[in-house]
Length: 162
Image 1 (cartoon, rainbow, N blue to C red):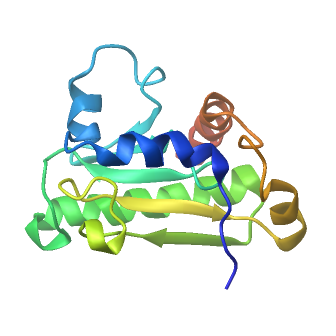
Image 2 (cartoon, rainbow, N blue to C red):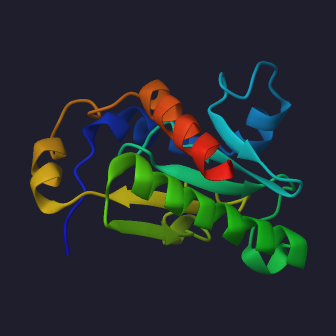
């Protein structure tokens, strides 16, 4: 098992993770373009958004529009949308980053590691190959900005959607 070293997430650990406010509901209520909010793709029931405190470049999340705490709280359509968007996200990060491994998962509840425990979401995390990982590990900032990840992934998503 490899250990993720992501010092650029320290601001989130110190401040963002302490808030009980729902970042996803706030994001959806905010004004501005999807690009300004790093929303990559929208479906009728859910959306794909970049994590602004990524574990790795291209770390994105599939999120239902409706505020629900657990997978068991979702409708069949919402659950289906989360998995379809996770699959689309997987295809996009594989193509955009050339990674052979991708981790998809949910942290349900704060003890399980959820930073936003009240609004269920699935993480799609690129998992770099060994040589690349050593170059990232311990870096003071991510090797790619969230804006650069957004540009890279929107281009790939455009190709995938035809």
